[in-house]
Image (cartoon, one colour):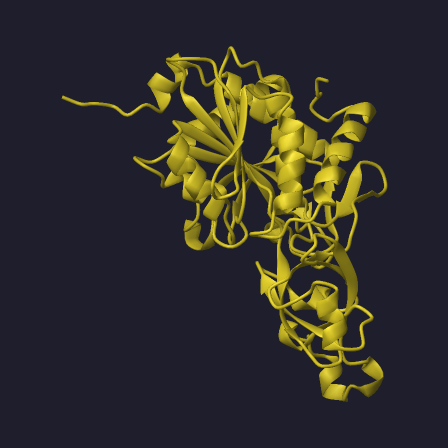
Length: 375
């Protein structure tokens, strides 16, 4: 399957099938077993080697041989979620967040709790009924520590018999679905879509042309932890991370604050983090991606993201320093149950990463990225 810049109908269908399989899986930070199993199952067919390191990262390799620069592709597999922090005597469950949530999106959502036996127990997030709220309460957002989960149990003992206890991990009970045209919505597109993009690119890249190590990292949402561990092991010569970025192209947001738009192609992040405290993209890699996109007619966007960062920040600071860049998928409503993206942006990103990586030849690397020894 070869993607055009926007993707044909069959290409989009195929990509959505992979994305849905990944996004619907359970996998909050630190509890990525189900999603990791899917990633390993898919990559085993395409890689020279697939392994799971001691931290839980999946590392797949295609090796060209000696003399080629070692290129790291990174996405993260974990999603934000919760831990059970308290169960009251009537069986209501209270939560502690894992990763960054906005409380305003949580009341009324369904959740899944991973029980000790591996089963998923469903529940709903409740709060004080609006009929009983005082006028001043109705305009306030209920903080997470005041929300509770109702699984239908009537006592703490009943909850515990189901294998739920303090520390049990929780995710949202949502499935990825298609909307109008090429738009889709679901949970955990941050960053299951980046994982899907790199799986597609990895499947197609010729191992005779590049030394590529695909890292599907754990625990990004809680401190970029998995990528840091993987990069320390691999000591790459250059890195491309794929993640989501905010598309704020919605009503009541000023145009200058959109960051990115859906359907306009993947995003090349020039810098992210507050005051560019995250990653400042390597200018030569950034230019390579732009030149590749222009040559192949792949639409793309440039962005500055004023808050948040990606695994690339941790990778860039590994060892002697790793030239790094981020290709991002514009996504609306990030860190919510209804993240929304355009499949065309994702399939274009897969092609862009693959084609740009082909151009990082040993000669290009020596000229543009290799450490220079001066007299």
